Length: 385
Image 1 (cartoon, rainbow, N blue to C red):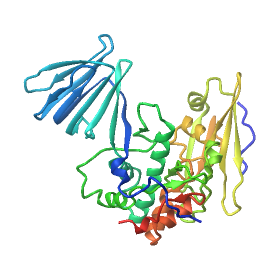
Image 2 (cartoon, rainbow, N blue to C red):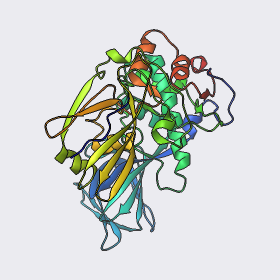
Image 3 (cartoon, one colour):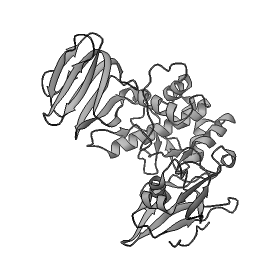
Image 4 (tube, rainbow, N blue to C red):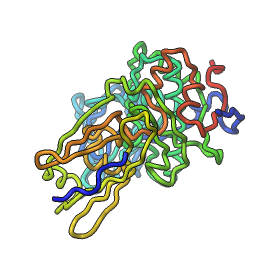
């Protein structure tokens, strides 16, 4: 197998309509918390099941197993314990309402939609934006990090959520609860552990980043830029550019250096059948950095050449293993050895660098202006209480 050529190595603060304090508790988002399940057992108090027929109200605490029958086109709802009653509701969507909703692995907000999908169903939770952001920030970033860092992360997460929600109008949900969008988990019991996160969310209530056209910025972020972020236009093409930041702290982070070795068989299984060769398209960076960030990779097969942008290539190989697009490679014992730095796509806020800035006493505004130099903020973060 042949290998192709190697890799070449003022924040403005206007007032924004609709971004007033308290907006987060009024804004609703729909989050797909489960993509496809066969059945689920839910416990809760004051449960209400709503299908195409009359709602069923169950006032006492109870547990129920819910299953969609694709052959009979109805929801089968069986009580677990107690009187062991059975309910049947029709319609492809089952709405569930109740307090203290819990499944076998996690708690859920008070409003769920179970949407039939093949032989199973997806679960979509509807909640206010404040609760959503709390569950995102606490899982996208250690909840004990500096408060100003958590504030900056909150503004980025809020902006991303609202921008994605707008782009998915007409869909049955706004956001995925995974790395496909933002990692989210609902856990109302973590009062003490998430105290700083709750403060960060409340104190930045309604604040968003805007792109140069005054649209809500799809504010990407990542774990570790490896020393320098990359403009979003380089990764996703059509997205508005966010600007580039140099991060002197990142080369000493835990994710500063990494390596990955894959055989050609493994690469073929992940990228394309009958893989014949790869060619990387690179971007030279400033001389002080030892390597460059990949723009894209051409994948050659007998059918022709398919071009993947850098992030598509990383996701295809495995984002947890190929940690970033800031890498070089060489042939090694029947495969390729990748050596790189950083963790993530490298666009927008660098979480490791923002932590260092927060520890140094920098404000959330300063952190945001560093990582989104082309963006505008709706109001000064530090003056919100």
